[in-house]
Image 1 (tube, rainbow, N blue to C red):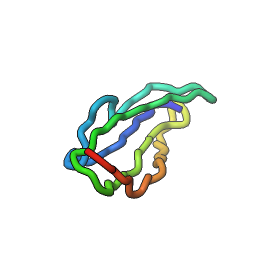
Image 2 (cartoon, rainbow, N blue to C red):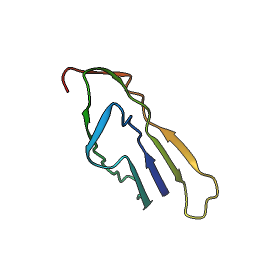
Image 3 (cartoon, one colour):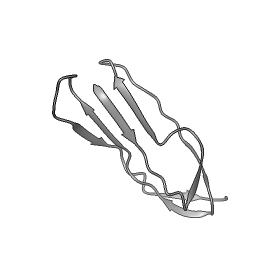
Image 4 (tube, helix red, strand yellow):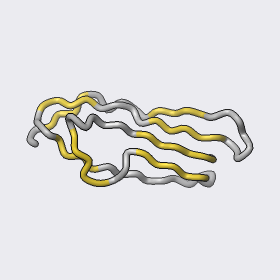
Length: 83
């Protein structure tokens, strides 16, 4: 994959970003390779919090004009027991 862009948005009203990045870019990822990504968030309050889908865009080849778009699974409502 080429020109990979990653976006993972979390509500700043519901969570504080403790570590990690919610966006990233990579020029290439070799076939069969992977990249791990960890984000640590701290909730501002307890209760059920909603999550969204992360978005990844990429090209199949360096000279490809067409951008592919993929989304992660929505995690649904996440139970936060304490803040």
